[in-house]
Length: 234
Image (cartoon, rainbow, N blue to C red; front, side):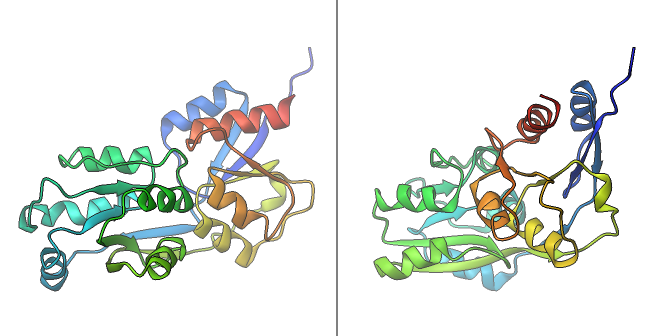
């Protein structure tokens, strides 16, 4: 009986042991090499003052990293039980729920869908907890609607390019637009190598570099691995 060589998959972020096991069970050979690093900012007294100066503003979180930055200072913030909170995805909402904060989440986990959700509620002002690298979708919405907002930088994303022999891999997986940008700063792919995107933002960014883009059914690593299996093994 001839053994089948497992398809080799590169993830541009770190994977857990459970991810590796899931991939192995599917007959995939996984490697991870992060193309971005994240530094959580320690919010200062001036940030706390800014947040407390707008006790009625709705809060926006587009990443769990922003939630982690706010968590240590939460007890110093003015509590308004009527404050509306928005989160782009369920994982960010779950991180907020650990702090007793419950967020509205759009049906599609991206900034455009979040803007659609916010436009239905007509808040007077917002506090936007974000990173140093962000899309302009939400800020453009504020400007177009002439809505007041404050921006709190909660974390910093740094692009890094590890040394990887790209030609060894049958597919490359991307979990953020920043990882896409970082990867293609250093590497090029042959036209036949599929790029798997965790969501629409990453998929759109990938289309700037390749036509071979496949988006996972849900925004999870396991869904991406299932797509790899279906795409490469069937």
